Picture 1: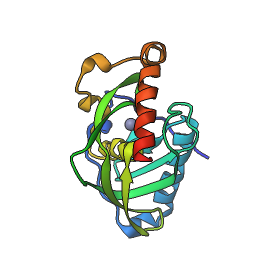
Picture 2: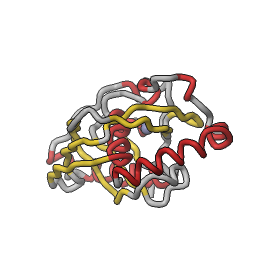
Picture 3: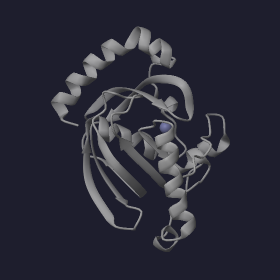
Amino acid sequence: MTVREILHVGNPLLRQVSREVTKNELASTQMQTLIDDLIDTMRAANGAGIAAPQIGELVRIATIEVNANPRYPYKPKIPLTIAVNPVVEFLDDELVDVNEGCLSVPNMRGNVMRHVNIRVRYWDRHGNEYDEVKRGLTAGTFQHELDHLDGVLFLDKVFDTTTLTTWEQFERFHRAAFIERITEFVQRVGS
Ligand code: ZN
């Protein structure tokens, strides 16, 4: 188990576009170890996901997992997913206003508009191909992680900077209203 250092906003590597990996490369010990490190680092930090550039590796790989997460107790569960070379397609124009945080942006949250219905195509760690529809907050989590592969942080998409809060101030002033709104949304959308 290797928990790697998570890069923080300001590190230029977080702003690079990551490259795709080939199936041969993916099978290598080096790439498989990287995936194990991503999982270990994500879990140690209680993240809902992490992308390879967040640990300084500029390849298009992200891991996602939501499992009774104390950072995001309202998020529907997502089984451990390894997304290699993921491609997202927006299925319609429906958007939801989601309060997000990021392991690379310590102690900050803000509101971002995310597509509610997306199609995502990716390989798992063994190169098996997936083509899935994701909805609701789960779709938002995928969009957040996949943005990292293009050097994009949630901060870039905060449309109203007055929604920026520290985690402590979020708990104090904003959590109750957000939980109420997003719980209604999750019940309606189902994920
Ligand atoms: Zn992030």
